[in-house]
Image 1 (cartoon, rainbow, N blue to C red):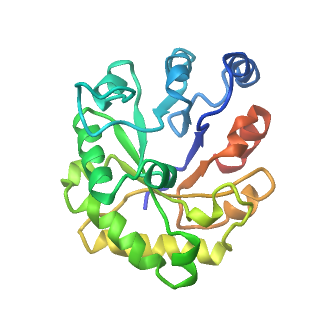
Image 2: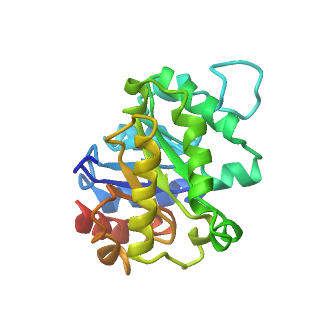
Length: 241
């Protein structure tokens, strides 16, 4: 496990341009770090890059180009200076019916284009209550990592986001997160993959970041709603980094 920690802010489909300008005014030169990654909607990606922030797109297609209205390819994202893409987020799996096979193909395309990948994995409420967390994680991780070379795998960050914790205010205990992160490590090691950073995401906020940061086998956090408030996100960054 790498000692390097990451703070990743997934802004989802939020903020107007005026709010983004205010966001920049609050941040100033702070948070310009390779360990802090901002994930704005596509429209604002160039502005974050111009401001000198490490930037990710929230999704890329499984195609490099073509007649796919509304899609953005990893080649296009890389060509404007984007460094990362989020892939496999539960909202993409749920609302856009992205299967493990589709996520796997997207990861391969993104890595081939030169992007690094933030791969989201996690179980639903029903799966968690049925004791299927490890089974779900093994399926989602194997679908992707079994098709990657060692070099490709080295450019993937895994973000564990239990679906039942996203935006709900429900957060697993530190012991639960530690156990899942340990399980993820073991699953990857079975494929001879080591040193992949593992992050936690799901209702991470200013009120619980200090407690969550005590977990010793994770390498940071994927933050949702809390990253929309720059003052709050800056404080969280200071706690972790």
